[in-house]
Length: 282
Image (tube, rainbow, N blue to C red; front, side):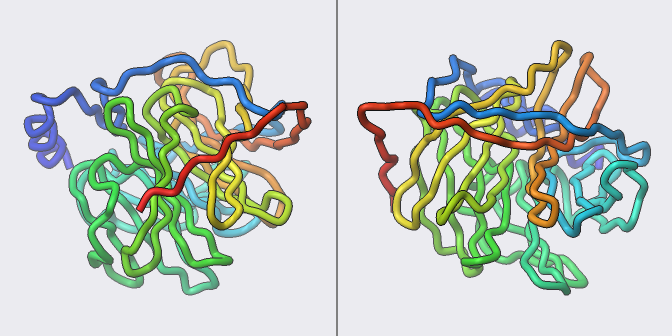
């Protein structure tokens, strides 16, 4: 793992420093935009994962189990929510994974992206290459939309920020969210939002969560919420658990202490004269 990471650093130094967590120093961080709704995020529980050296992309498996990417140990891990106790591990297919997600129902097909190569990796008993990741090495957070069999994925490059919707063959559309996102995106989670799809996105350098609504053709920015942590350092993975209607978020405080928070979401609508939509890009 260390050898692969060293080669990757050599390859990117001309463009900016990408650290072991996939955070790219060449991507600027600006001011979070205002939105249409008041987003309220409430932490109801926190826990650590003693067995993990790293907690990047997250995904949900059941009401009491989540998965996480741990490149430092070369593993995708499943742990119990609340305690962080280990359940199972899968060896990584290569260096520097970030996002992971799986199809439903069991037996799951696992997808994982990488910030060291441009492949979408797939695991179903063994690893293979599903297709070329359209977001390339700029992909990070991802989630699987089971109702429509699509992968949603973040992509940040310079001041450009896109959300990709990808089918199981690699066909995709993308949405430009550059005016709604202040910096490099990290986690992503999809969830039911009325009759539409809600998408929460996080960024490495802020504890704000950014909410979008997808109606099947257009994407609309709704607003952002802040967790209110005084010692926040970094934000990584995000996932939604439909069985308990809660989110789980991996983050760092005091520079090095890694935690996972269980978070509730509520929303208060604000009056707006006009609401703009984000144009679909092909």
